[in-house]
Structure formats: structure tokens, C-alpha cells
Length: 416
Image (cartoon, rainbow, N blue to C red; front, top):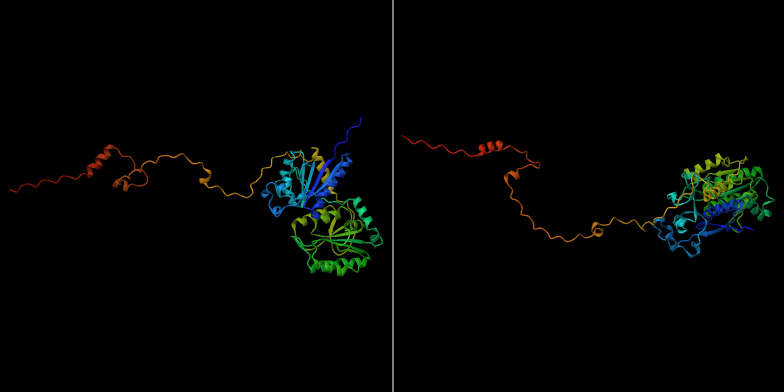
């Protein structure tokens, strides 16, 4: 008798919809699906984009009471709950910390990046290694999860084959970020960058595959366009289909600005030489990240010349997916998945300490006693010191009284 088919494992990939954040949640969900199907487990992925009404999304998670009440209808965060909840980004935190309680423990909750809340609120936290987090339910990875696979690169290359096939080698993909908290790309640095790219490309007779991000400052974008558009290749201006993955597939070398973890991790997954382009600014976390890529043989600082080397493609997304499945079955990590703890709803705002008269119950009325008359002060008490007087014996008291008693006057003798 044929066994009935098992229902698919339902996975939600949740973010605020920003491309870089969503790619991490969806990339990990897709990797879990690939690993699960290799074990004959069917997976169904649903992409959720969280939206908040008004400015509720800017509140700290502990001030967001009843978060489902403040979601936009398009968010669609409602039962039936998934088997696996994968979330990325600050906007998802008020939901992720309650997901296990809402589902009655059915949902396995994974939070990507450093949530900056106690990790015990989730089943698994997957931060980048450069955030330096550790714990039983923490899985640090190099960079961030992504959607790059060999199959996707081949598919995307096919869409742009007619434009890319005839381009001369070496083909150099240049992936440009822009302004962030730690980095900037002013015109002066953009001019230096253009010179560092132009000279070796002209000498080697190669072609340029350049793409900008939405964070690239417009003056820097205009300058790089003007300086490099004469070279063979393609510069994507944001119009039409995005050739980003096709550029990764076609490139012999990949240059990435140092401000982007996502782009550098995706480039390192191709197995091709990755060069890091210097920007204005600095960041310890990003320096640790680039050093980790260097230790794995994937990336090197760009010094103005192209050269090749080989390394094993970095597949941290696949490693994270295997760990998620193992922990869901109770076999991964040093210990079993973290036990579900009840989430205590915090107050809407820090409350001041209550005044005593408003919180203490009133005492029963008591008939007041009449005030005592003050005792008359005596010479002994007014001159007394605060400390008690030492006791004296009766004999010593009698002697003292005798000394103070006035003596009688002697009677005068009559005169003769």
C-alpha cells in the first residue's frame, strides 16, 4: 500500500522588502529547500514583506505591544503558522520574538544578523562572524546568506548572452556601493577609482561590466560613467532588466567596494578572484569581514592590477541551511534546540515609580491620643549630656547631699 504523501514543510521568508535584506531571508529559505529536497522533503516557500502603520515600525521592539495589530494588511502575518520562520532586519523583531508563542511551539524561528536582543528569544540566530557573537543557539557565518547559485548564474547569463558573449577578456565586473554609516564615495575618491580601473583594462584589452547601487552618490556615478564609458563592455544605468547576476557569471575578475557585505559574499561564492575597492571611511567590522575572506582565499585588496588565483567557493548559505534542518530535527549544534520560553509583554513605556500614597491601601482610622504636656525642664535635665548618666551608690549620694546642704550660722556670744 502506498504511503500518503507528507504535507510540505512551510517556510516563511520575512523582511521589510528592501532588496539587500530580503535577499538574505529568501536566500537562506531557498538553500533550506534545496537541502530538504535532497532528503526527499518537499518545501513550500512564502515571501512576506512586513509593513507598519504610521511610525510604529520605528519603535523599539519592547514598546511595540500587540504588533500584529499595527501591521499593514499586505503583511499577511497570520495563522496558519509556518514550520520554519526565517526573518531578517530590525522591522521583523517584534514579530520574531513572539512567533514561537503564537504557534504554540510549532514554528522554528531563525533570525538573521545580530538582533541585539537576547538570542534565547529565537531558536537560532545567524549573524556574520565579524559581529563576534557566540552561544549555543548562534551560528556565525562569513558574510550573509544570499541567492547566488551556479544554476542561477547560468540562467541569468543566458538572458544577456547576446550582449556579453562577444566582449573581450579579461572581463572585469565592478560592483559599486555608496554612502553608508561607515563609508562614503566622494567625487575625489571616485576619480581615483576610475583611474585604477581604466589603466589595467586598457593595457590588458579587456571589457568592463559595471553596476551601481541605489546608495551610489549621483556625482560619483556621473564621474565614473564619463571616465569609463569609452571602454568595451556594459554599464548598467538602472533601466531595464538588472544584469547583476549575469555580470557575476561572465566576469573573470570581480571588484567590490568595501561597504557591502552582501556583494562581497555573493562574489566570493563564484570561486573567482575578488578585489576589494577602497572607499572613504573605515569600519572595524568590515575590516574583520575582509580579513576573513582573505583567510579563505577569496578576496584581496585591489592594488591597481588584475591577477588570478583559485580557491574553494565560499558556501556559507548552504552550511547555514544544513544546520537549520539539523536543529529542526534535534540533531544540530552542541545542544538540542532552545526550549521555548514564554515571552513577557513589556510595558508600553518605562513607568515611573508609583508614589506611596497611590499604591498603599489606606489604614483603618485610629482615635488620636491627646497630646502630652511637655515636662518641665530641670536643672539636671537641661544640663544633662546626650549620653546617660552613670549610676551612683546611696553612700556617694548622701555625701554629695551633705556637701551641698547649707550649714547653720553660729550664735554670737553675749557681751560681758
